[in-house]
Image (tube, rainbow, N blue to C red; front, top):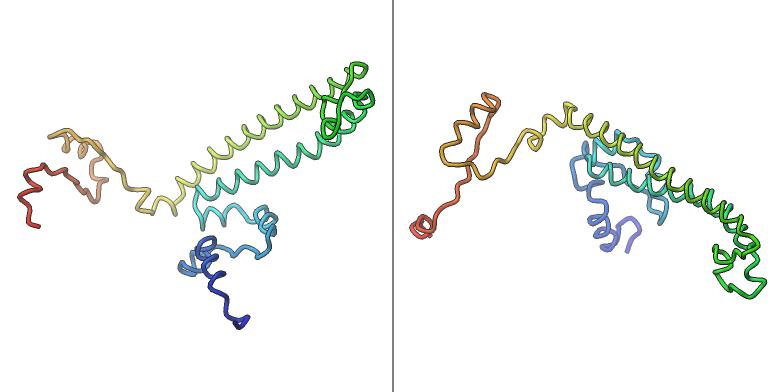
Length: 206
C-alpha cells in the first residue's frame, strides 16, 4: 500500500480516538495530537485552557485537568519522598541481622530497634503528603467553581439550545398555567409529551 494512503487500521483508530480532528466542520476541529506513544503527555500540558473549552466542552476540559492534577501530585511526591525515605530504610540495619530480605530492605520494615528515630522522617513525609494533597484538591475545587460559572455565563454557551432548555416531568393535571406564570414570556417553544392510556394505544391506527 502506498505511504500516501493510510491503512484501514489507522483510519479506524482515528475514527475511534480522534473523531473531532477531521469528522467535524473545519471551524470546530480540535488540534490533532502527536503520533508518538507518550508524546501526548507534553502536549496535554501545553494546550491552552481556552482551546480545550472551546472545542471539547466543560467535561473534557476537567477530565484533562484531573489527569494533569494527578500527574502533578504523584510526580512531585515521588521526587521528594523517594529520595528521603529509601536511603533511610536501607540504613535501618534490620537486614544485617537477617530480619528482612528482597524488596523489604527498601521499606520501613528494615528499620531496626536501634534506628527508631528514622520513624520521625516517615511521619514528616506522611504529613507532607496529606497537606499537599488536601491543598491541591482545595485549589482545584476553587478553580472548578470559577471556570464552571464563567463557562455557563459566557455568551457562547448561553446561545446553545441545551443551555436554554429544561425538562419538567410529572406536571399535575391543570398546573400548566402555573408554569407559564412562573416563566412568563421567556418561554419561546413549549412541547408537551403526554403518556397515552392503553385504550388510546389500542384504538390508534397501526
